[in-house]
Image 1 (tube, rainbow, N blue to C red):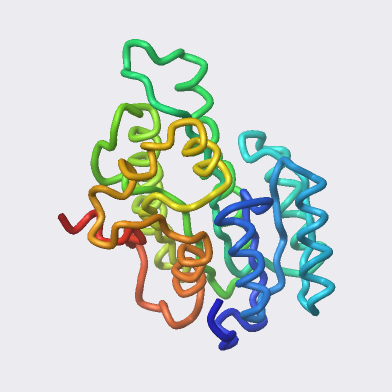
Image 2 (tube, helix red, strand yellow):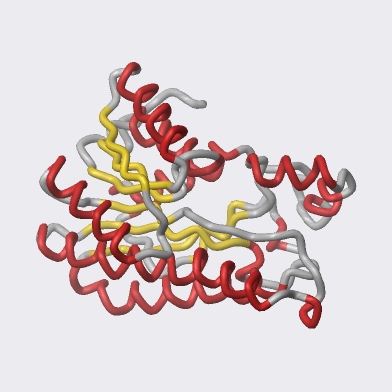
Length: 257
């Protein structure tokens, strides 16, 4: 990790999917950059361990165990943030879920529903509750939603995931247009294959998956979670003050070829 520069100094940030992978990397990075964070995820023990680690290092963090597919859980996380810190300046809506692909006609309806619930409704649930908190604060804010290279083009046999990540991009652009006059910036990260716990498990089961995952990229390797977190930190910072409605690739050049 590069030396902290205070990129998010004095900002209050909510992070979903925070117990592992990109979300956990973002929690560590954002607090190192000066933010106070509320971390939301389903796995309570991991979440509490991460909060303890951040606090032991001098950072400020709160944990809210919850599922982004449940509006009441998201509401609880936003309310907890306001109670703990008095405002919400920024949010990284990073929770997501996918599965090893099967062709469309062999995909179970339950798999489609789960992918759409977590990746699309989860982002909807979060923005629907985060934006009023930012409006209430009166100073605007910034939101980053995690999409994927699958939000730009079809990748393999994962049609529900491709559909969901396209939807995240649509939600991001529409919300950016709606709330720009309120000084709320909303962007999406188009993330390439990243060395998360879930992907490592998939590669362990299907070793050839790693080569397939990086075959399209100019930089033929997996991203490290912190590399994605750095892009999110910049977009949430005041340095990105004229960036909104964007789809920012963090994909090793995958979308360039």
